[in-house]
Image (cartoon, rainbow, N blue to C red; front, side, top):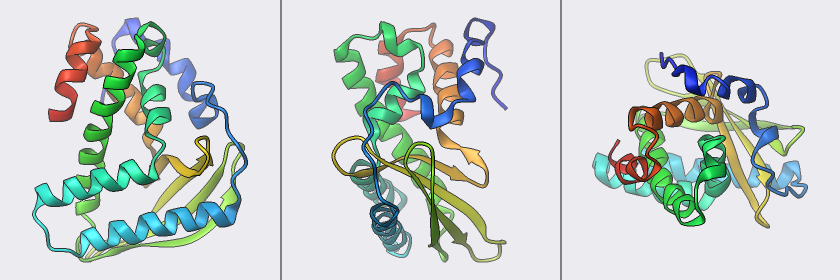
Amino acid sequence: MITLPNRRSVLCQGLAFGGAAMIGTPVWAVSEADALRHVQGLVAEVNAVIASGQSEAQMLLQFEGIFDRYADVPTIAGYVLGVERRSASPTQLTAFTRAYKTYIARKYGRRFREFIGGEVQVTGTRPLPRGVEVTAIAVLRGRAPFQVDFHVEDSRGRPLFFNIIIEGINMLLSERAEILALLDSKGGDLNRLIAELPQT
């Protein structure tokens, strides 16, 4: 369990808002049908990589491409920086977004590698205050199935997912806590975090 330093305890006040408080990004309506098609495409690509028999390095590279195509990376990266985003320069934000994309794709790519021999099955949709939740079940060998939910919105002219909830763990909330803890461990030096994050 990550324990946040006291100087960042203000973070806790913001966690309860989840995706609804995400950095003021304009959002257009996304239909449940469009969100469903988006996640079906994502799941099809994930399942294909899982079944490919590639090496870990090859699979992680594939997952990074999938994350780039299907996720709203700038919105996610901005959210996980929390209040630190306000003091970052545009150049730093661009660099952080690029570094974070590699970091999160590798991290969740390793998680999806656990699905080898199984698959993710899309099961339905429901509207959210912001966007649409597409529900899915991960069916693995030798393990009870578990829930994987994708939150999808249209903030960049097309459907993109901005959050994943795996077995009840909210990606946005856990990632914000972890990234700010990593930033603290580097003395609050955002440039150092950007440089080291892809290898974390």
